[in-house]
Image 1 (tube, one colour):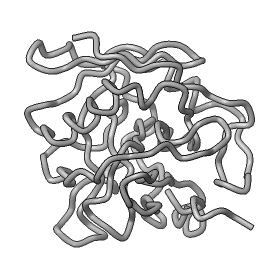
Image 2 (cartoon, helix red, strand yellow; image 1 turned 60 degrees about the vertical axis):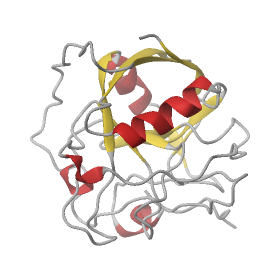
Image 3 (cartoon, rainbow, N blue to C red; image 1 turned 45 degrees about the vertical axis):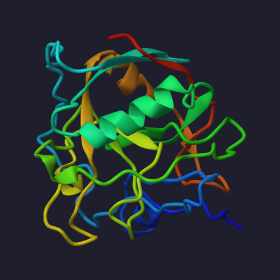
Length: 227
């Protein structure tokens, strides 16, 4: 039987051939397991080839380095357009939450999810969910980092994040309904997009937890603020 963590980017796996799925919360502060996201029939729609132009870092914004078992990924975080989300993410970074977590789900044509589970799929404790800032004008384009949330609750993101492997416009803010509010983008890969692509290409299997779990653990060794 699937655990309660088998949700979508778990409902998405049920409704569409490809999908992003996951859980927003872990649990010491009463947060419930979160579903994630779905858009039947739209998964993976983009213009074909990946977009590999990475922006120059903005000196005003925080920069973090994520060291994985596949290499390092550097992000600049948009503290201007997503201040609450960036503050929330840095809270977890500064407390070492992400160290020793994994990329728990991999969807080669959409995105990679990580930052909540240990290698044995224990969910790490999380704080109170952050308000969803998906209406900030940022889009789920290739190379952006965004928050996983419960598909049934707008303001439910905690520590679980995903990195967009392709443009995923169906995840963007559309309206103020639960279904249309979107998934908050709060940063951009500035170095290591090749690492993201290598992770997206790993072999996956269906497990008791998720449909698209890496066969071999993809470890997040550490995440540190470097500026």
